[in-house]
Image 1 (tube, rainbow, N blue to C red):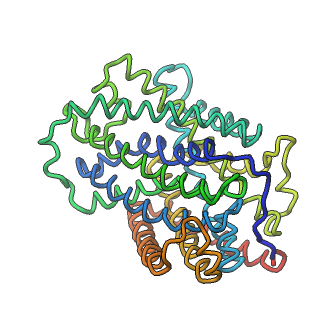
Image 2: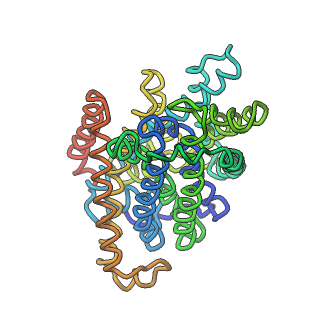
Image 3: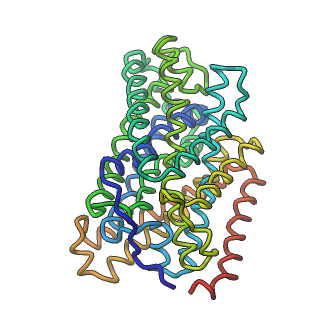
Length: 429
């Protein structure tokens, strides 16, 4: 198999890569899931966000180390294929492909927000329309969608910062106690749920092969975006959990109306429920098609499926991701359950990629030492082992809180991937 370090046109610089990473980790999760987290654990949502952020930063470090040393387009497929086994690469791709069900959660939030402002527009139709719009935007090419993302992420970050600034002075400190009104189980369940959207910055590694300076830009984008978002997430969770007069499971739009007043809350809803959801779907599609291009070119799927249009955008992969995102919308799955399904696939992929970070350092210690982010190998081993353990714990918690039929559906998805891998193995090697 030839899963080497293929390099495409290097058109992505840090001004595009950083907003892509930041938009993957900021906006979507905090908007869609903060109310759910508060409902699960009350004021413990603040601690849940804090724990989730620490776990995600721990997991992100091996990604940043490997992304700096081995930048590849479609890295979540190419790293396991190169350092573990071709079939591990395919399974890494397959579970990541399943995480794009999360597109439906963001499209659903878009539709609900638009419907609240314009009741004449059905929420479901608005969500599907938004998803189709973003697929069309990505078909116009990486540079077009990347520039749009810069504007979107600035608007979303400003909206969330405004909510935190307006809300923190209105916090009732007494509401922080008891910190865990529903016990540790609720808090840990919330933390596990939050790790998937919080870990989005690592996915910028999928675009490393298209970056002008990946050795610098991958670590800066992954670690910088995650750290910046972590502080904002904790502040927003503190407001949602500790401002008096809010319901037990408040949406951020409800929080905004309570702390900002109606005119500012309307602007907040526009920035987070409309603009942010377009942005998070945009970045999902921007990075999500890269591994499929490598999979097709390596023979796991027919190479014709990797065909690019005149603007260099992959037609079939983008349409496939859009279809995967549409299925939960059409079947009306619960948003939190959709995120849990995505989190399971993301955790499996993370285990593979983290292991590759250690295997890369062992396979070529000289080249590893020359990397701009070459932390001592014993330290990398400890960090990676801890990160892998955290991912297994996350998977356990997610499976425990996912309805049985959906857990079986996810297991069935993995089984289908294994069957395809076994059937196509000979042709791909």
